[in-house]
Image (cartoon, rainbow, N blue to C red; front, side, top):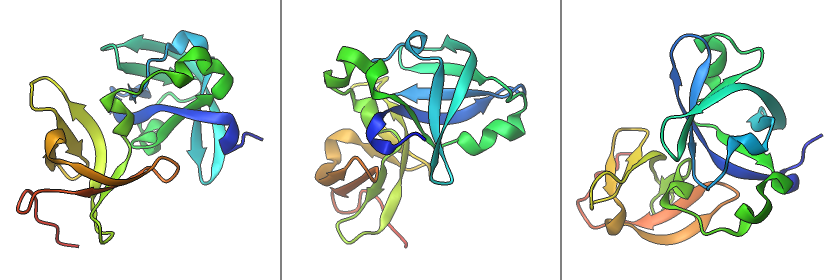
Length: 170
């Protein structure tokens, strides 16, 4: 049985790609998929390894992955938004590398009083104004975020945003 202490997050699964079961993996650390035969996913509280059949890189931080025995879009769709893990020993020296801004993909952004702003699903760093893209289509400039508390285990980020930047209706 795989335990949480034995694994480390490498990224978050994004949207499916095509109809044959491929999915985007947005990696938030410098990791080469060549270094592992499988990726671990939390399925109903149990960490399950899924063996990689094929992969290809779209960018230096995004890969398209096809798992063994998952051959349809319907079977891979539940992975969307889930954290991808690998065994810590496969990280080697990379485990201590400085995390990129992509580390925050998968974190849920909360207000100081606990209201959910949204889950970070992507980072747009194509311009000087880097943006967190949330699952509810809210765009938050990284420079406007004051992080009050960060909980990597729960994947939560308590933030303070400038007044009026977004309206939260929870």
